Amino acid sequence: MKSKFILITTTVIAIISIILSKKVFFGPPHIVGSYDKLHSCEVIQVPGGFGPESIAFDPNGDGPYTGVADGRILKWQGLDIGWTEFAVTTSQRKECVRPFAPEMEHICGRPLGLRFDKKTGDLYIADAYFGFQVVGPAGGLATQLVTEAEGQLFRFTNDLDIDEDDGVIYFTDTSTSFQRRQFMSSILSGDKTGRLLKYNKSSKEVTVLSQDIAFANGVALSKDRTFVLVAETTTGRILRFWLQGPDTGKFDVFAELPGFPDNIRRTSNGDFWVALHAKKGLSGKILSNPWCGKTMLKLPLSFRQLHSMLVGGKPHATAIKLSEKGEVLEVLEDSEGKTLRFISEVEEKDGKLWMGSVMVPFIGICNF
Ligand SMILES: *[C@@H]1O[C@H](CO)[C@@H](O)[C@H](O)[C@H]1NC(C)=O
Image (tube, rainbow, N blue to C red; front, side, top):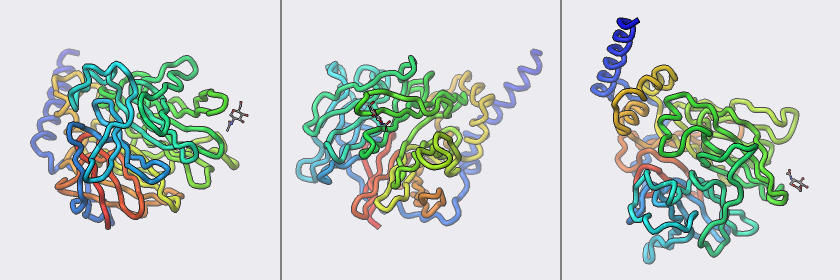
C-alpha cells in the first residue's frame, strides 16, 4: 500500500516537473483556420482597477460598463474623462481600496456578468459573492434580487442574459461548493454542482433549470429565443437548453471547444462570440481528470503554478465565433499573447470587438 502511494506520488511529481519545464511542448495545439490578429487590438487601461470581466453598453449605446476586482462597476466616458464609478454591489466598502485582493471579495463584492435591460435601462448584475442584483439607470448601490434557489444559497453567481419579451432572466451559479477565488479547485476537483437558473421579473420567483453543470459560466439567449446557451468551463462544452419546440426543457451539446469557455455574447445577427479563458493543452487534459486534479490540489503548489499547469503554453487570447447552429465561424487569437491574454468576454458593437479579461488591468478593442 505504502509503496503504491510512493509510486503514484513520484509519478505525479515527475509529470509536474515535465509540465513546468516543457511548457511549450505541452502547450495547446494550433486551431485550424485560426487568425492570429488579436495582437493588433488597442487597449484601454483601467487605472486603479483590475480584471474588467464583463462588458455592457447601456440602451443609449454609452459605455461600456465593466465590473472590476475591487467590487466597483465602472463606466467608460471616453478618453477625456476616462472611467467613472457607476455602481457597487455592497455598501460596506471602507476597506475596499486595493485593486486586486481576492481575500476581500466577500466584503467588497465581485461583479461578473453585466447586462442592461434595453426597455428599462436597468443594469442586471451577477455578483460572484452578493448574488443576482439590479441597479437603475442612475447607478449607485445595487439591490439584491435573490440569494438562493430551492433552499440552496448562491455561492458563485456568474453570468446572465435577459429575455425582455418574457420578462425573465437566465443566470448561472457556477458552483454550490466553491467560491470565485477557489475557481481552480472547482475545475480540478471535477465539481459538477453548477446551476442554470431562471428569474421571473413579475413573480420574482427563481426556478432551477439544471443543477449538475461542471462550472456553469457564460449565458446567452438565442436571437429567436428558442434556446439558452451555458458555458460548461471544466469540460470545454457549450450546452444548449431548449426553451421552445419538441425538446423544451432538455439539454444538448451545442459545441465542444478546444479550451475553457468563459462568457458568451450574441452578435446583432444571432451568432455568438465565446471567449476562451485559455486553450486546453495536454497538461490541461491530464488535470481535467478529477483524480489527477484532486491529487494536484493536495500538493504544495501555488495558485500561479496550478493555473499555469492547467492552461499550459503561453497565455494568449482566443475568441471563437459560433453560428446559431453551433458551427465554428471564426477563430481569432493573439498567439504570442503580445496584447491580450486570458480574455473573459467578447462583445461586438458597431463592428468592433470589445474584450474583457479577469486577469489583466485593461480591456481590448479590436477593429478589423
Ligand atoms: C412569470 O410570472 C407571472 C406571474 O406569476 C406569470 O404569469 C408568467 O407566465 C411567468 N412568466 C414566465 C415566462 O414564466
